[in-house]
Amino acid sequence: MPSELVKVTVDTLAFAVQQGSLEVLLVKRKNEPFKSLWGLPGGFLSDSDENLDAAAVRELYEETNVTNVYLEQLYTFGDRGRDPRGRVITVAYLALMRQEGLELRASSEASGLAWWPVNEPPPLAFDHDRIITYAYQRLKYKIEYSPAAFALLPEKFTLRDLQTVYEAILGRSVDNRNFRKKFLSSGVLQELNETSQEGSYRPARLYCFSEQDFEKLPDRPVFVF
Amino acid sequence: MPSELVKVTVDTLAFAVQQGSLEVLLVKRKNEPFKSLWGLPGGFLSDSDENLDAAAVRELYEETNVTNVYLEQLYTFGDRGRDPRGRVITVAYLALMRQEGLELRASSEASGLAWWPVNEPPPLAFDHDRIITYAYQRLKYKIEYSPAAFALLPEKFTLRDLQTVYEAILGRSVDNRNFRKKFLSSGVLQELNETSQEGSYRPARLYCFSEQDFEKLPDRPVFVF
DNA sequence: GCAAAAGTGTTTATATTACACCCATGA
DNA sequence: TCATGGGTGTAATATAAACACTTTTGC
Image (tube, rainbow over all chains, first blue to last red):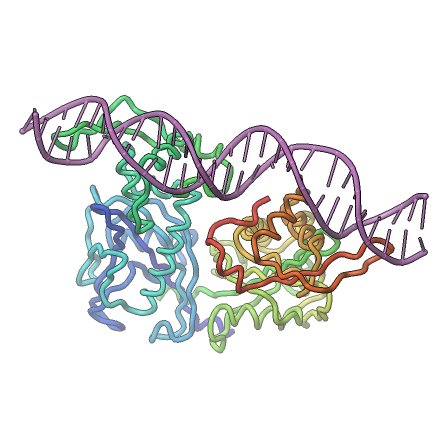
């Protein structure tokens, strides 16, 4: 059967926002092919993986030590010639997280592990530049109709933190009065009786995301700015 | 390498609207597993396929004789146990077409080939019921922001034809004054100097879709009713 | 002239956009 | 008291939603 020759990998696009910049987590390759170029964390699907999502979780953990983050399938890339080792198709996953609190650890297969600005990535292996471009586009759309942005924030956050995430992903600034108005009236934020003191100026109110109230929204774009 | 055991299929969800009803094209299986149940047209990825899209085109043609239709990748399903023959992941494709003009022909692997109402499918093989549900949901969203509906219509169509496609997919009726107003003002329709005479009543104006004008629209939902 | 589907406008409510200043805090 | 980021409101415009009758055709 011809498909015996096909191999399947699962690669993850791990995004985080750091100081107003959207970054993606990449691995420096220690081995051929594309030795010493950077690539997406990922690896071959194993028969022991319960499903594709589990494979993405496992590979992300093995390659970066990152665990317990938001993950969802994005798209499957399978052009002939995308991998010089033969016919390899890859199922790409989107992962959203915060850098704070992670204990990154590269696997022995890697000679490096680092966050890169999504707009200025290093030279990349395979078709990973294309995959990053695709994922970034999808993420831009996704924050308009889903609560994906909250996966990039701690449980408690200020409205400024939330706006910074949107601005980092959209790549432009948004009007802060309209932004606050829309999010506050959407009903998905729970106001906490706590504030965040960051410097010698007015402390900011903290909020948390209410999954339950999000479910009540119509399933069409509501976080458009 | 564990992935040697993984096989890859490409399955296609071929949708068409017939007499106001959204239908999906299914194949009756002649062989095990799931002999005599219905399933999606598809088959194993071949090393000779240039890419996954090409595999979908080829498999759809081989299994149904359908060719030259709109196709796009939807999602990849890979739960362990979804195929009793072993670890088989399937890349699902969405295909949109008109039934009129097709010359359906089942392959020798099939004992039948038929259109089924998407809401009342026959007993299905594998996890194909889940895949149909997923694809139908995606199609519902898709017609709000993309010109996908036009792929279900002939080149020249009436506004009533277009509304029928939307109503079939949304599963509800929409206000015809608002529907016409929105589509006519969107700029994506070119009015033709032709009419369609269907019976002993007033003929309807024919229109065609302008891809070029569609590109000028903002890339967010515009065909929401 | 009748049956059948095509075609048309207005009003109201809601959502979006644009825009600039005061507030609270720690140093 | 000052420097810094937090926090607020209104008016204009655009979009969405609700709603019913007239027109054109073949028979």
